[in-house]
Image 1 (cartoon, rainbow, N blue to C red):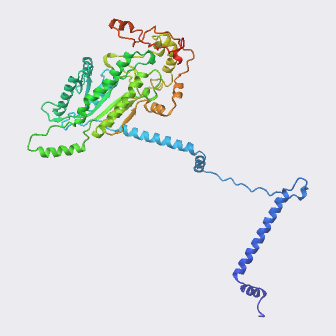
Image 2 (image 1 turned 180 degrees about the vertical axis):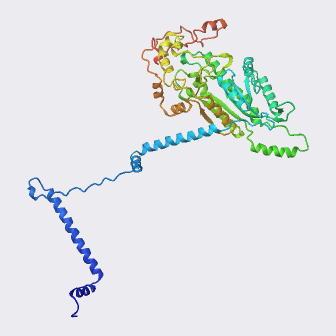
Length: 518
């Protein structure tokens, strides 16, 4: 080993040491170094936190804070951080955006839809629509004209000779009058039977052309939409009786008259030929493909009936009754596969629409002033009330009639276009819309939401309804009660002006007390 260097001898000796011993030794050294560092840090912290009486020479200097390196944050990370901090607001924005996108998509599909009634191969009209509404109403006239343009044969129910003249004044060959006098039950039955025979007979579009059978697609009920606005105390019972007869009983009787046709499934009679069997099979297959069930559409104004504001008892009562009647009618006809749709109307813009008899016309709601009659302001209406009623109700009546959310819809905003109503009606008739209730028109959905979820006290406060501190004093029966007995015709004429205020009987045992406080 004389030629071996000391380094080689050391390496040879170290090679005999196991690898685990080397690793253990390194771990022990690292542990010792870490323990010493921790102990030094602990001692430094302890000395730096000594009480104030310890000299500063014994206090070690605190280590400098670690350097903060500013890392640039991208736009995506900033958005993610903002979303994580505002989760509720983000959810609201997502829901609102999704709703707007969905509504826009549906509106674009509705605008691109081709709305035309089916026609025969010869070009003749096949589908019939009956509108049970006064032809003096612009809503009836506009809907009839639109359905006629789309290829339907439109029948408008005429109760009087004046109604027939208005229908003839439209000068449209496929808009025809349907004489139906609901006051004469025998004539009503005869009119319905005649109409049923008309549907079962084949018709030709041109003379000597190919004949086709007509199909009743829908019966549309448009009740009278004009209502009196006044406190209940100033409405005589005779006015309530007239309103219930014309606005409630007449629509119900009209629908009742059409029920035999709606549930009869009118089909053309079988052909008396040898090919009857084959033609019957073909017609049955055709019926399976087509929807032969007529639809029933009931129109009612929805703004007043949604919130039931003060001074609108006639409209709120009648519209609620019609809504209940429509719901019951739908439940009865649903097993017979006759769909019933309740069309709840908001505000529409009738500007530019030419009404009957040259009447001036303005934008109005579907629930009032639809015959072109300009309603007097609230202040002018109160002038016709007795002093006691004016003192009791006039201030709230005027405030409510001029409120931002008055009874004519959202004040300052024009009504919806009539095209929205026309498209909705066609979509219900052709089966695109299958909902039992359809809201259309400005304010229909908004007032429905307000009436369902917003407290009534808040709604009335926005309308300007306030507490009345100074009330009218009891004046006995100076004006007379219309229920006080029978009167002849002359007496009724004399009471026409005084019947606008109904006296309330005084309370028993209360002398000189103001009954309006009770």
